[in-house]
Image 1 (spheres, helix red, strand yellow):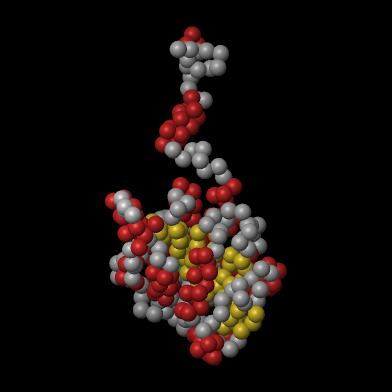
Image 2: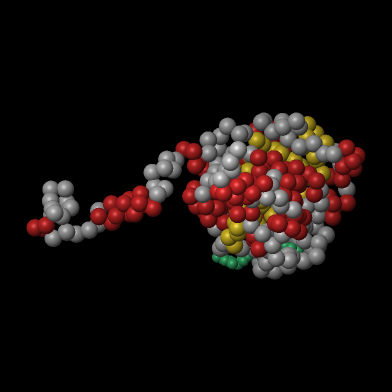
Length: 332
Ligand SMILES: Cc1ncc(C[n+]2csc(CCOP(=O)(O)OP(=O)(O)O)c2C)c(N)n1
Ligand code: SF4
Ligand SMILES: [Mg+2]
């Protein structure tokens, strides 16, 4: 059998082995004990285990501590602008459906300034994974209240305590048409986080994963009750969800079987803040994906794009009367 040179190169690219180091970008500058570190470690492990080719993988973010994540991945990355990670990711996915697209965003980035994009991204259901790093505060700008800040918490913008009930990103997401995957992880159970990321990655559509994340700098000790008491974490198990290893299951005994195809039940489970539900709340692989409902071939080629733009410009061109044909375009 003769193997041609191009085929040989393609085979080499395919078979290229990647270890964890292959996905490690610059050294993280997050604070010690910051939950963002656990998210990063899990995502790097996922890339390695799924053998994702770095040149076929892109991490997109907005602005915030969490949004520094693309710098720490040795893949393609786009550190965007505050609240706008999703439109950037959607543009990438539309033009390059072959890429694995991940979005890293904070509770301010996603649920405050980026809230409109968040809602519509759920409805579009494009094939990508969003990780919401929810530390319940604006970390990068040093402690202003975010939509998920607990009521009563004193911050730079709420010196007498946050006035409003915190927004629950899970119930909001589960309330939007076309929702197709919703899960919750916590940074102190990395095994569950990894399994959830893995399920999210394999989901066909928009997978929304909220990670409840410690911010020791500005929210010191706020999650200690849940970190210290395994009983206050409610692990959702199911054959179509996640299962903990036997070792971890001995520690996290507070478990309930939850069928992720049950949307009504998912909404009820998502409402619980204590215990914190951990696992896959909802999964429906049959929701149509936006990229499939479009006609991608129409504008894809460079020639096609140029012709379409020229046709649009022509509509606004004012031609001299005597040169105009019946169609409105010059007669030559
Ligand atoms: C348009 C715009 N408005 C405000 C800011 C300032 N800003 C930068 S990050 C941030 C909040 C970040 O909070 P979050 O998204 O929760 O991320 P964290 O730092 O907590 O990870 C704000 C308000 C900005 N960079 N751009
Ligand atoms: S300020 Fe908070 S969120 Fe930001 S890096 Fe430090 S611990 Fe992490
Ligand atoms: Mg935050």
